Image (cartoon, rainbow over all chains, first blue to last red):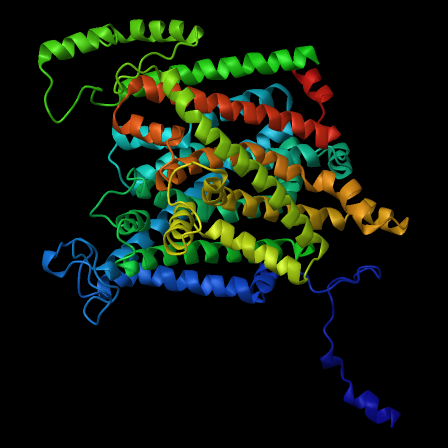
Length: 309
Length: 312
């Protein structure tokens, strides 16, 4: 028996380790952080539903206007205010334009505005807020004052000025939103860092000789990731909202270009008569913002399992 | 203390000066003048109008006159609404916006913090889910969609509320809901997420181990830290409600400041644009100042002392 067993376990079954781990190093397989985050994100059904919706929206934003038999800008005054039919899938508006094409052109504008604004806010806001909170003193005061002055200009005014001086378009709106959009992010990062930088682990890092930028980028900013993500979660839909809001007021994307805000404003006067003109853009903008919100929630939980619902 | 607040006031004045300057020159950069109309104004009349409003002088002189008047709190005459001063228009219209805004802020903070605390206390229970569904809907449905929807369903179809105007107290309900839906959602989420973080902190465990009641733990220990991000949000919230009021006033036909602001811009009413901009700026700076005070009160670690030392 004993001989058999030793015969079954051969030397070839073992691989020689290049080093011997110390006994106290008992740990699971080391997983890169992003893979861990992704695993937790995928297991969140609501967040995944949001992702699926957003992917579908992006696909439709790309192919929607192509597969429609009608373009989004041609007036057809014989066929105004038609309900959805096999020819006009979402009906037509008061100028006889195809709502199906216009809805997906609106989706293009919303997605581009939302993503561009989020990237700009994230980069500028985190760097600016991080420096404000971390360096403190005079620097904080001057930078905070500068952001305060910029912020005290109502963003509507910034947008309007830019829209008058430049050509009113989607890019002007992105530019205008970026001028003031990052400030909120920077203040939240600043507030968090002010709170964190007096804590013991920062003192520990400092007494170990870590440089300022290392403490800021390796210790403080990763620890503010939760609030940054919560804020960013609200940045994409709020940029989408701002674009629709400005277009709703008649200050944003101009006809014949299609924005959900313009479409809702057009439909407002007569939506007791032609509810579908209001329904499709209102539903889609709400659903898009909802999808970004649940996705952002999921992302936050995935980054910070402490906060998991 | 005196030095700290003195410094604050000086910095507010400096920002207002910078802002006034920036607004003035940006206004000058806009093509067109306030007397551009569909019907061409005869050149002599136009020249007289330009002279009356001082627009014929070189820009730097206009700027100095504008600053001098500003020092006397004189915002000038509206260029479009004849015989009306800018401060008169602001005084007439701001009352509506102010009442709406104050109600919206109070409702937002009270309902938002309450929802956030409830959600954190009954974590993963029904109340939590309901509060979070409300919060997600609040940030997802745009205020102009919500406002027109409520106006149609509750005003037109059910007839519970007036469709437009601000006569009685009931008329405030729909605009205030439309204005506060987003801040409520934002505050509820912020409160919940920080409260959950705080509730898992060591000192809360200690408090629990001492046998303190749940209520005492939440209100005496957790809330002071949990409310910090909400305090940071006070500035942006004011801005949110100010800009929100523009669209809400338009939908519900309320003659507030927001309506005048949009109108002044499309009319190129320079003096009114500058007046309303500076006025908005003062409001937002007061909100920021209050945020700073509140910040120090709820979190003594960011006290006046360290700031005073830094700015001394």
